[in-house]
Image (cartoon, rainbow, N blue to C red):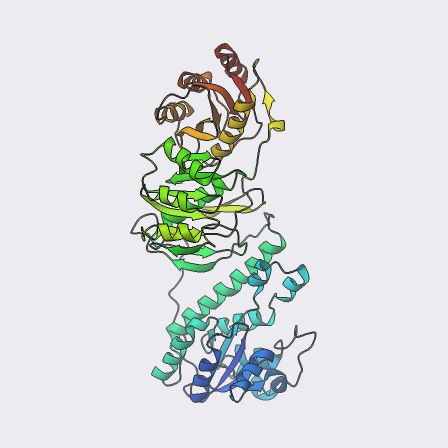
Length: 525
């Protein structure tokens, strides 16, 4: 049965005399002086803490320190300063409840009508690589308590957690006789609860980054509202998480049009792929699948090799580099139409060359993501979330089991390992043909593995005798393997594990090709 929620009744307005007292305690002091000066001009008493009180005093604004107001000093290095009944009673009291008013009178509690709080910079402290103790000290306690109290009592109290909202609040106070309208108080309260929820989620994920706990939450900070989602009728936005992982979400965009939802997804797929390789590597991605991936002696060499795999599909693609973009490579890239270039860095000459195509989005990340770092990934389903550890699995030569009479040659072995790493980033059912450190045919996202083998062969620019083939999962029958043999594959890498492995191995032996099992599958849905 569907759950329905009644439309909330309008909240009563604060006292008609308007807000009288503002409690201000902020770490981010952007815009603070002008905001506080406007509040003072509107007749508000300013109540503040520690560094914020000093900042306001330096602006010659009359401010009462919280310690003086409560009669209790800050203690324990500032861990305890606002956790006091005169503070929380002033925030939480209902102005329409006689018992609450009587309690305020009995205990000398003054109403606090505006709460202006932003929190200790926990995320910035973690991302700056500070030690555990310093990160712990940047977990705010009093701030979230006051924010939640004010947001709960938004019928009477306005809570402001974002300096960007200061002008909005001042305008509302001026336009409505010193009273913040109900709809704005409600919106600011919702924003405040979102902030504290995200803040706690960041802390939880930092303390236990890979634990699938009974209650799980994910936090993000709005980085960009996007024009639309996968399609124009879908709303979308980009949020950054606490990790600061190098990639599209944290990159510096130095030129080009605004990134779309689809651009962001494709660029992420491309950059995570090239991060798999130590040698110079280029990946060209379309619709989250690679159309060409190659290693090279230089970035220019890698680019030409990757582009040659499938020049038609590469049109309008995403180009990812695992090294700095140099002038020669930039000039070559301008010979095709691409949407995005992403790289750890770029030379001044390369950036000057790319400026000739101002619509190309150029993203610099400063470093590569660590593809072996454990982390959680999440996707939505109806009514829930699917959460898993990221696929950080990597196969080395020592992990392989030769199951055919013929073992792969050294050259085949290098290509097998290369192809299997690429396969990890191709939508299943995935088949990757490779030769000499480059892909020569890719079959992605098919319902039949046989069809993936055929499509990958069909995508080849020309027959490639001596190539190898990688499969992200086992061959359930010999038919897929035989399609690869027909295409010219001389060696195969696959996880193994089918009940018909013996049949597939026999087909490989009959064809005189080498086959190795990895024991590790790389489905990507």
